[in-house]
Length: 120
Image (cartoon, rainbow, N blue to C red; front, side):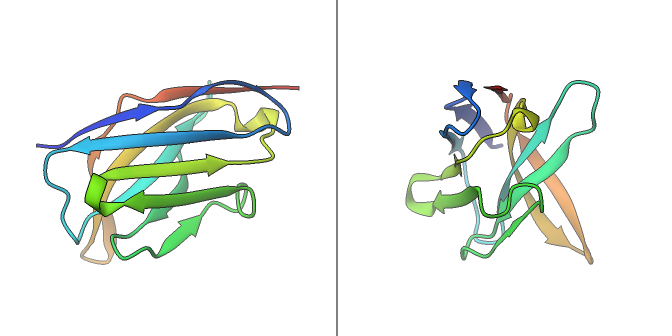
């Protein structure tokens, strides 16, 4: 069993920055991918960024060049540095672990979410 606890959300003005953290308790394996997702009111949850244990990353087009995902495997901690924030980045941000399996991707665990609000 893995528990994920996010922190670092808050209210920021457009153009500002925030850094989200997610601490995982329990065993994180080398096959585990970790990611950040977000869900805005009335919208579906969407992938923001994902990182493998070895550091390979992928990003949603909407955040490329502004957000950076990283992980500290020794500390079982995932980060999301968010720069040049826009009002459309406002959402609840969720930490997640999963694995690539059988040509697809399987979600394993989710955090409880942290609110990010960007004012214009």
